[in-house]
Image (cartoon, rainbow, N blue to C red; front, side, top):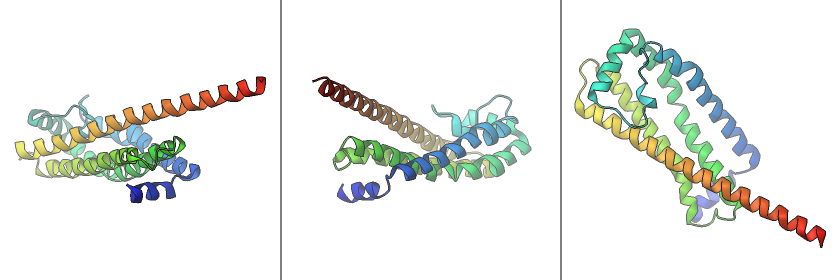
Length: 194
């Protein structure tokens, strides 16, 4: 715990956290506005595997890859996935530091709560595993196997769950930080009146 707390503490200056957050957000916005829509344009409204948080099955993957066609599958491989191999690392670092920054504001960085900062790292690892399996699926199409699809789906679902849990925790921490700031402000106003 001490090692993790010290490692995070070393990198949670406001400027560094903000820089990582902005960079991560820019890559994410590029995916949402450029690479995902350009790839999905081939899919006749079907969602790419990266953005199906509840998971998918063999039939969905077969239908999606068939709908994408050769050009869409090539776009998935050469347009969307390269950016999605950059994003998980940025997400893991950025959101680990964001949570560490706010836990530090609450004087909770050197408590077991610091282990919550590992959640975005877990999400990033499973995002990489998801991407690797999507590459395997694209390379093996049309000879898909249930086992490969199930493995990719497992990684996608774990990524989604860990990401969702992380954001619930982050929002909770932000609410607590906000309430503490409001209480301090009220205490200052009361002491000024007295």
